[in-house]
Image 1 (cartoon, one colour):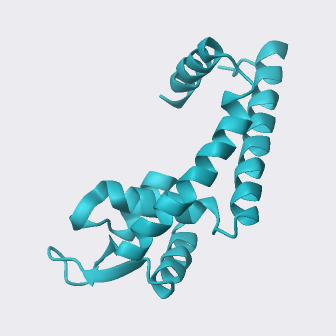
Image 2 (cartoon, helix red, strand yellow):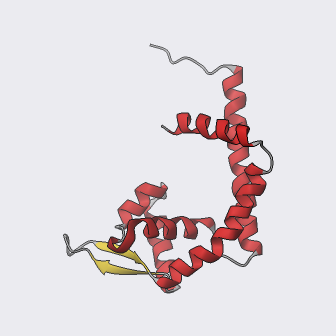
Image 3 (cartoon, helix red, strand yellow):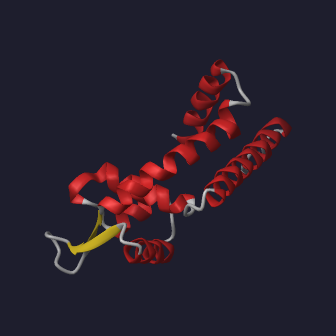
Length: 146
């Protein structure tokens, strides 16, 4: 059976979605850089570790939650650990595995990054759409993400 091709409207929606994502991410990264803060990938890992609580996460769990390639996760965790933001411990269930735990320095960095990140989100999305449009966009993107 032949796959159906997307309509012109679907192609336009796809292109606009990709462009909007690229523009929004560039705005966020630029704002973080201007504030002399690390990249958004640091924030994302630290946030997932905060959500995990005291138990921490295995690197493979970080990888799956953030959809980052394994080799990139390993390097990122190395940098976070060198900066004193996380620590690695042996996994209790599997002595060969590791668990990454958020340190207080990581919590503090999250608190410093959020105002810059949040303001960039507002500039990239919130200030360009009405409240109703934001809700509708969230609903539509939720459909695509599920």
